[in-house]
Amino acid sequence: MSEKRVARVTDIIASSPIGFDDAIKVGFERATRTLRGITGMKVTEMRVAVDENQIAEYRVRLEVIFVLES
Image (cartoon, rainbow, N blue to C red; front, side):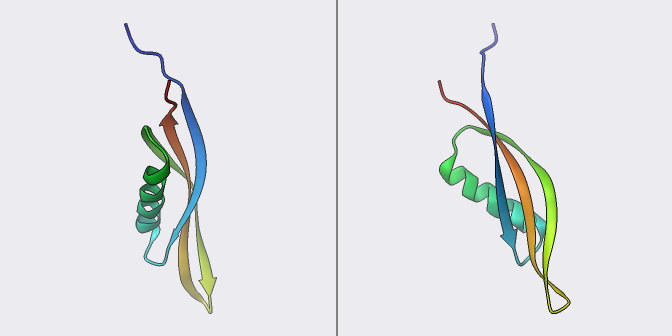
């Protein structure tokens, strides 16, 4: 018999001056310090901040999916 589980989704925004991949890693590492039972993430948005005609920061919005504890 399979176990019943309930999950929750929370949005976080993370940024990095290096790139989108690094911003995702920053967001994931921060989420793991607060949330337990993370089962997945979805990148829902990617943006850049521009300063003086240069990309200054890469930003991602993430949906973090985690299982609620019983």
